[in-house]
Length: 208
Image 1 (cartoon, rainbow, N blue to C red):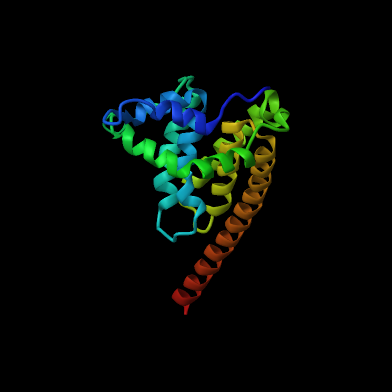
Image 2: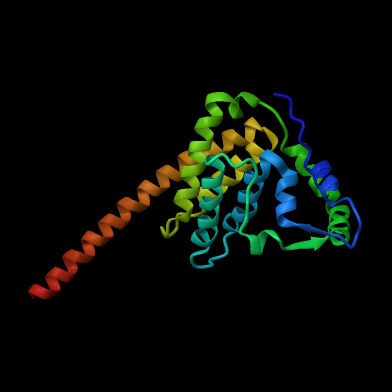
């Protein structure tokens, strides 16, 4: 598969126009076309990849990700936001200025994340990746303590893989998904043991 998507060129094309005109979120996602879901989920996921200690952050961001997933698997070609959110936007002049300031960083990202090892993101491997991506998002949305960082990075790498057809990012996403599964099982085992210990201690206290 030949990659024809350039993030900088796509943003430059969408931000072009009269500086006082407004680019809405709906127009932005439409301009991203088939990659709108991965891009929107990536944007929601970024706060989870930074250890902030904010309570319920993974659930607050994970639920909208699940909402986007239902649209994706429902066959909608482009991600759709509730009207009161999708109609919001920024003047193109501000966006053009921001793009100019961040050009070198975006182009560095394009050089780092690009189409390679594409069989990881086509056919059956792609379908399996989408399943793993969905399970990571579901796990992130669940209120499990200490279990958001690994799935957040797995989602991050999978989104980059889907945006740029990058098999290397897909491999990293799979690696973090395996780590997530092992870590989650460990947490559930520890939590189960802690609950049993607490019940035993409470029972002993009551009997004494």
